[in-house]
Length: 445
Image (tube, rainbow, N blue to C red; front, side, top):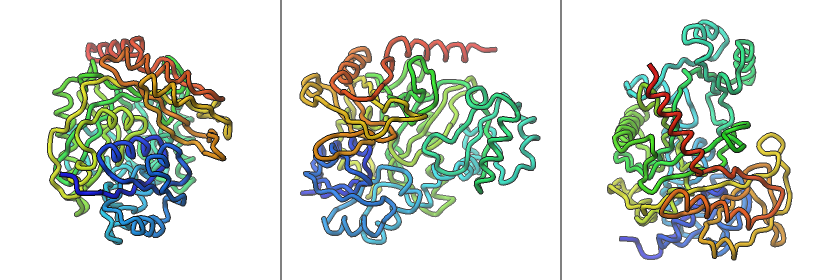
């Protein structure tokens, strides 16, 4: 049962947090928000009871939560969690849905994660080695083969620090130059084997022991149609009405869930602290089975927009169960397909045009049945402006992927400004390409 008048503090200001806030309000919560900058969608959900400040000012966040007599907090972005947001709020008697700094290492340190998977013999781990100096790097590259190299800085990079052979690295000189660049910035490097397959996002709710999954989603990282152009934070995503993908089976998901459960147990053993919050497993299906690409310690963005709007279970209750350690399975989701398309500033992600006005016909978007989520925008005197990051997400929900894609695409036509988006996300053409790619891989000798 939901407690009477649950007051919830939402921390963050992106489209992911807009979707989290919407789910909390739908679940019966009274919402307040602490944001780095004004998100007009979140502000509306909070009846404008918001505060703007730095997300690393934990004392101010705690004071704001106390002033509003919140029952618990929900953290959206990873950076404050990696810095100890949950620990700080717990010290002020504010229960927080989000991992402690110890558990947050699953995202904040790639070396911690790979080493943990190795130590506890998690099957879906891959070949890797970490370095804090240049010594030994050429030998390891020679060992795994130059064309099998992926280089990652150890810490948080906002999804943009990874460089892969063939995409960003074309020679041994490129590899060594990037390694030196990271090391010169007092960084540590992890070099991993390059995987070949299809990725998917599997977001789970975790109460320290139980790991309960949500419908799987596939993100689209490339900036332009046809999976061309530079990697981005995510140009959009889709999910199917059966909550699987044509190339990912229910057996695959059972395996992924088992792997994540083993990881949660390993984190508790290693740190002495239970992981409580949202855990995002990025998996890739390969010729050798499912492999872990990375973990994120929060909801994905854009994937939050695919998962939360079709959730039938009460999200407030789920958050309470996470905190209380009695999460129940399974959760209920509508048997609907979803397509999320991001509108981003022209020039994104290389030279985005900032502070350009966006005009939105919310009436027509609502009439269409599409959902609108504000991301990195600013509101000044009732007008919306772009920043240098993704601006607005439009979501279509329908019985089929084709219908959901049409709704999302039509929804983008009611937003005007110096923006662009990928028109092909959720299309049959893209889906067929992914299906054929997976078939080729599985049929390789």
